[in-house]
Amino acid sequence: MSETAPAKRLYIKTYGCQMNVYDSERMADVLAPLGYGMTDDPAAADLVVLNTCHIREKATEKVYSELGKLREMRDERLSEGGSRMTIAVAGCVAQAEGEEIMRRQPAVDLVVGPQAYHQLPELIARSHRARGERLAADFAPDEKFDTLPSDRRPTGVSAFLTVQEGCDKFCTFCVVPYTRGGEWSRPPDAIEAEARSLAAQGVREVTLLGQNVNAYGGEGGLAGLVRRLATIPGLDRIRYTTSHPRDMDEALIAAHGEVEALMPYLHLPVQAGSDKILRAMNRTHTAESYVRVVERVRAARPDIALSGDFIVGFPGERESDFEATLQLVREVGYASCFSFKYSRRPGTPAAALPGQVPEEVKEERLSRLNALLDEQRMAFNQAQTGRTLKVLFEKAGRHPGQLVGKSPYLQAVHVTAPDRMLGEIVPVKVESAAQNSLAGVVELETA
Ligand code: 5AD
Ligand code: SF4
Image 1: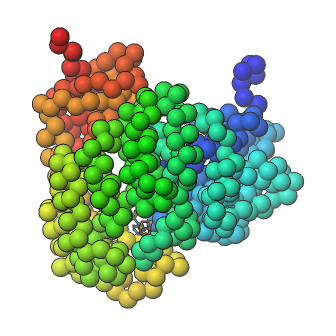
Image 2: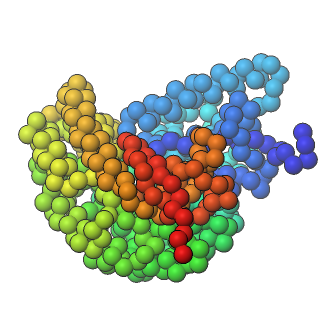
Image 3: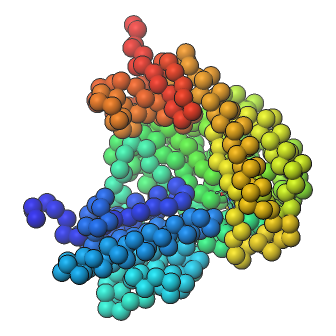
């Protein structure tokens, strides 16, 4: 082993949302002082962390199948006289069914919920003495954020930054209020300090994260926070996700028209287009009130790219309800979207509703919805051809001499450009569009 090689190797696999991506980075930060360095190879890892997602049944099942593979890997290594692999399960599955994980998969050494991972070093040490460490159920994120190391090392020029956690909305299909707890906001000073430290290390873009980020309760609300962060030198782009239509207040909408750093992209889930279904989902908005919010946002920022989440096959959804969803999509016009088949989650109110929709009906509706959303995404991408967009170059592309960046509208843009442009925001003339990306050329400054 060379002198610089880390003493111990850490492999983290992240499932689910961007907040898990943030949490995984912070877990690595917590473990770094113990000598853990990252590896891409689970077979070589001393510690494997699965940072899990509980939102849909499929996401949860993936975790158990991955654990089965890890167990084989671990046993094989031991039988060959190799070193011990510690297996930890973190995230929302750990929170929701920690005990079941320990029972179903004996290879797991410890489980740790989303508000307790700052205690990983202690948990790992204890698990080496006796299996079965379980830490969850504590919903106060204060302690976690107070304990996390302040010297966060960003991994690129665009970084996630958690500002809010949890949800009080209780949509009847959703486990989040149970796995992440009630709405809680980080103080603006702490967020600003983290953002300044990221910017000082070359980060040009932050995405503010929260399960209900626009319900951010710190002083000045989310609009105030955005305006504050927009003054940080070097931080040229600000995004936020995920928002609830009920919390799109005037101040935030106005910020979209006034704050240059606030990117013209809004992820605003609607879930369904039928008021009957929206009511059964406890969304507390109607299709009409959602469309009004979109209109107000577009009045402030006409070119804004909209994105959303949709669920098809919610209990009681008839063909006519589903058609109302298609109608809403046509009316709004989305630049990108995420659509899901309703997944029955134990413990949520909707799981007990009558009128569960058969799998093949969900399947069929999902493909019709996706066909429409794909069409809209392609149209949005094509509308950019011929335009010059500012692109933040984030990484090398697949082909030599190519860089990949992001447009203000969060589209991937492939460009032939020198490596020195990495981390820079450069005008790019868009020449062609595909379903998932754009291609263009660097626009040379003409004096
Ligand atoms: N079934 C299907 N999709 C769900 N989502 C949340 N819970 C469920 C569920 N039980 C989707 C919603 C939410 C996104 C994060 O995941 O669309 O906005
Ligand atoms: Fe879940 Fe609804 Fe809260 Fe979003 S707003 S996290 S869908 S309960």
